[in-house]
Amino acid sequence: QLQLVESGGGLVQPGGSLRISCAASGFTLDTYAVAWFRQAPGKEREGVSCISGSEGSTYYPDSVKGRFTISRDNAKNTVYLQMNSLKSEDTGVYYCATNLDRFCSWRSERRRVTIPTWGYDYWGQGIQVTVSS
Image 1 (cartoon, one colour):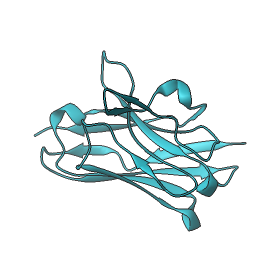
Image 2 (cartoon, rainbow, N blue to C red; image 1 turned 90 degrees about the vertical axis):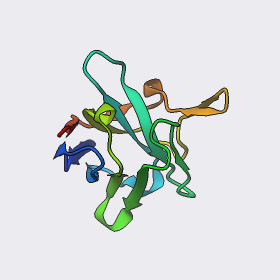
Image 3 (cartoon, helix red, strand yellow; image 1 turned 90 degrees about the horizontal axis):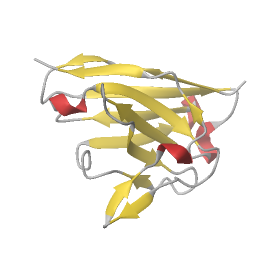
């Protein structure tokens, strides 16, 4: 059974760092694109990064570019999201997802990267990340 499980969430102070993980079971992640999304209370789910399954190309919206880094460890069948210089607006439930395709589903709108939720079919259960002093 295909499964994605997030871990590593928690409470962090503004300006701090946190690394969250997405471990896959039931299939091998290395050839597939994996994306991270987040959802704050009362807001729509937002894509914050994606890594392709082929060349390892990465995509970030302006809201996190330069602060977040997505990576993968194929030996561990895991994708990571390193989050630095965290802000209160980064608070939310973070989800990983895959489209079981080599390439990320993403769009360029006015030269800005967006990662749409409809481009991904398999989702983890989500973990809470809270940025607060």
